[in-house]
Length: 292
Image (tube, rainbow, N blue to C red):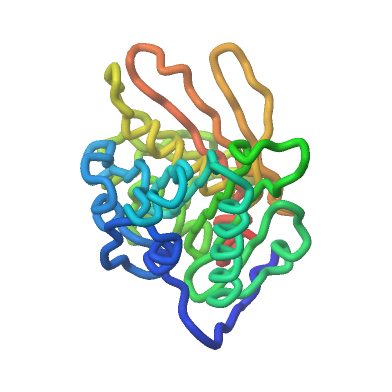
C-alpha cells in the first residue's frame, strides 16, 4: 500500500502516558515512540524472557490499588519486543468498564495521532499514525451475544519505517549488514546480534531468511522469539494471517495488496533445534515505506 505522510498538531503520542491514563501501576519513564524492554520490565520485574540481547517483556500490568477497590480489574497482557508493542485487555467485570476503557483509549489515540484510510474503513479495527509510530486498535463491542468477560481491547504499536528496517530489528541485523543475495536459491550466512544462526537466500522475487537456535524444555528459544516477533508485526501490518496447516509444519501468509504476500514457515523443532523461515517479497523490502 502507499504510505501516508502524517503531520500531527497537538500533543505527541506516548505509550507511557496511555498506561497512566488507564491507571496502570508503576509506570516509569518510557521512550518514544515505543518503550524498550528494560522500561517495560519495571511494570513486572522478572517477566523478561529470552537470551540477552534477544529478549522481550511478556507480562501483566497491575492497576492501581484505588481502582482495584472499585471493581474487579480486567486481565492484561503486555508484550514489548524490538519492533512492536502489544497490550491486550480482557475479562471485563461488566460492560461499563469496557466502555470507559474503550473511550479512554480511542480518545487518546485520536487526540495524539491521525486516523489512517485503512483505519477509517475497517470494522472492529482502528488504525492511527503519527511521527514514527502506527497504532492499531482492535476491539470486540458489547452486544447481546457477548458476555462482558468475552469483550476485549487490544492496542498494537509498530514503528513507521521501511519494512527492511523492521526486518533488521526483528532478526538482529546491523544497519551496515548488506542484504542483497543473488537470485540463485543458495543460502548465505548473515551476522546477527542475536544468538541465532541466520541465513539468507533469494528465489525469484522473494527473499528468504532462515533462523535457528537450540531449544530447551520449559524455555523459549531465540529462534522462536524471532518467529513470534515476525508474526505479531505482520499481523499489525496486514491483518491476521491465514494459511495451510500441516502435521509437522505451519505456513502462514499475509497479503500485501499488490506486492504479493509475505509468509512464515515454522519448523517442527526436531533434533532439539528450532528452525523458522521468513519469506518476503523483494518489492516490499525495497519499497522504502512501512506497509499500511
